[in-house]
Length: 299
Image 1 (spheres, rainbow, N blue to C red):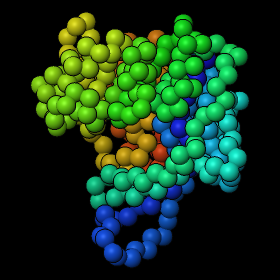
Image 2 (image 1 turned 90 degrees about the vertical axis):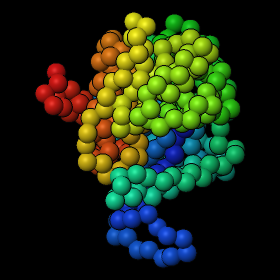
Image 3 (image 1 turned 45 degrees about the vertical axis):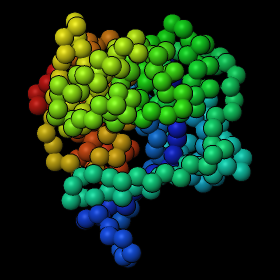
Image 4 (image 1 turned 120 degrees about the horizontal axis):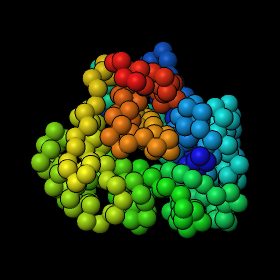
């Protein structure tokens, strides 16, 4: 199965702090973590680690951060034949404040308005699976049109330009609870399942593909055989949630590509995302396939 991931690449700089910084104060820390990031970038990296034949179509700047991103992906086994290096456009950077006290993170991303995939020619190779993160709308639509036979999966993280059109074209719409709130207009907490179901029904009226709503530590909600199913996550000691959603989506793509049932796909993707928050950083926290499949004795 040939898998193509389309979307953003960024360079992440993670700063772990013992508590969230106060305004107008100075802080010193002894360590930081740097690696490539971005939803499709992280998903492709995980898929390569799990021994899939994976390609990444993404754009970076022709600078130091862009070269580091390329080297990291190549070392993992990701094919970057469809990468584009833009001259005089800096690579997107994300500055991540990791609150060790809560395991949460705050991300500030600096993306130049010119950072967009420009090579819109057809991909010469047909793909079996396409994963999209909703960035680079024109490129994503071209790939969808050029691969009508492919299974298409989208990470619907936020309601933004082109996202709704892309969702309507995908076989699997895996959306965040933020996306579900914003699109449906229904305010809910992740444990208010009746309200989540109401939002689900509103989204399902618009998006024909299989719909999954991720609910952070509460798991994921979907419908199987026309019945609502809440697939619970697993309890872990969270240190850093950076990249957890990307790792979930990468694992989801892997299991769909390998013909797992929807229930098992979500169950194991929940485990992959949960295990990732036990370590700091995105690339550094990716669990192995074996770790996911043997967690709590699962086989």
